[in-house]
Image (tube, rainbow, N blue to C red; front, side, top):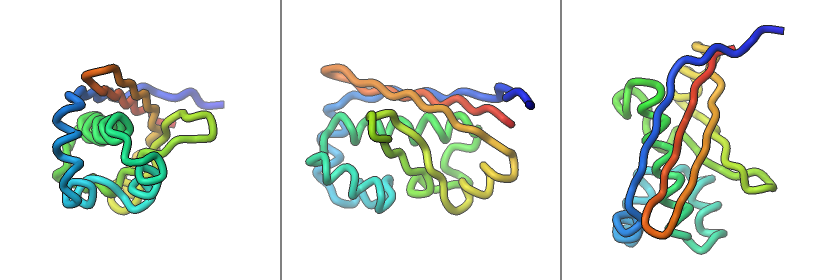
Length: 126
């Protein structure tokens, strides 16, 4: 069995009040979130904390792959949760092509407190 090889890490932190303000604008959600994410966020009453965690995860992802959003779009990265609430990443479009071509495996951790949300993405290669 082949071992995973660590490649890169990306991290981000943001103030919840910035996301609270931005989320009032529907264009913000449409610009940064996939349809699946928007459905998830609406099902959780557009929780500022969840929006902030997902937004941070996207920025951390873009940092980890090293290109920012020059090659991929934020909507090509979906941050969803499993039954236990653990976040995971689903890619589409160019992000999916990159994931498959480079044999990337993404690991994600998100957190929030009263004033901030943060996310860290670690990329391994199979």
